[in-house]
Image 1 (tube, rainbow, N blue to C red):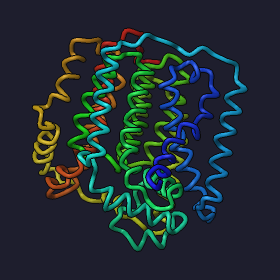
Image 2: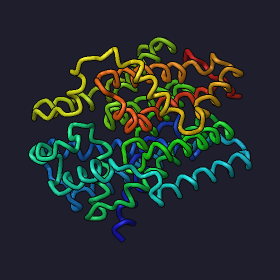
Image 3: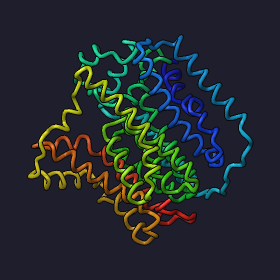
Image 4: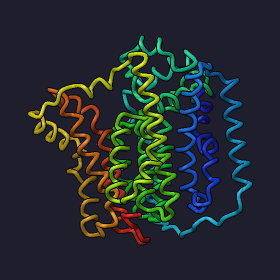
Length: 419
């Protein structure tokens, strides 16, 4: 029962975020895309709610969180039901591609439940930190200072989701924590399929990530929600026709990304640069940046106020340019994914034989996030261990951007890099 209740917290996320369906340009999207967007929105709402309660010194409890959650769900459903009915876009599915995609989803589930994709960080960092949050009834500075080894200054979204699940189950459900990974992976594929309408493109993403997940070990860590937020942003800017829809999903995705991991902030910067330079849309960049800046800015103020710098202290470390060859060599070794770089070479070949102009937005994000990754690792005098232990997960972001670029290069629907 503990595990079922813990998992229920994640299954409620689409309902918690259903308020986003009130927009007509969202209701026109296929159901799978709408569910994915509301899942991501629900995750952001839960994290912001719990962080706000801690800011106001309101202790987390079932007696408070459950009624608030129910009120959010009911209010969202009422608002959506009052909107005029709009037929969603429908497109026949390719049965072969759909069946093959389901096989890779099943493999990801199998890899998760057999601990082949679980990350040690879940057992030693994310999980214990969520337990401490839950026991304290909030984000307690005293607790955080007592456990600095838990990277307590990291953005809190993933930990807050685990603590939210813990509130349902009354003790941390390790199964719920790891099974959230395939659930969010399914939502990620829903974004790709719903935004691009490309079954084979979705299959490409499913096949590639289901394989790289086996070597990146993301289950229980922050990568599954982070990649969902990033997929929303990249695919939204690339495939969605309505400028309002592009702006909304980008705003939600960037807010979630920066509140999830340090790398989410560099991804947000890469995205904003791309919007300004490639899409030439300064207004969209400003709108999308504001909620993300408020969330990460608020968290940084909190971290500085309680003098809890840990991971962020790395930004002040000196650069070691002489380590650049080692960094590049080690990253190349990791990026090989024991498959001769095929996860990268296949999309690169597809892009080369496709319409590169359609892929400019994801290609820009790919290049900028690659540069950011290298920049991070040259701040260590001996970076080999750090790269080998963390980069399999970190480079999932540029890989995702490259895969979306490959899908865009062969998109049947018009894709404009300047929208």
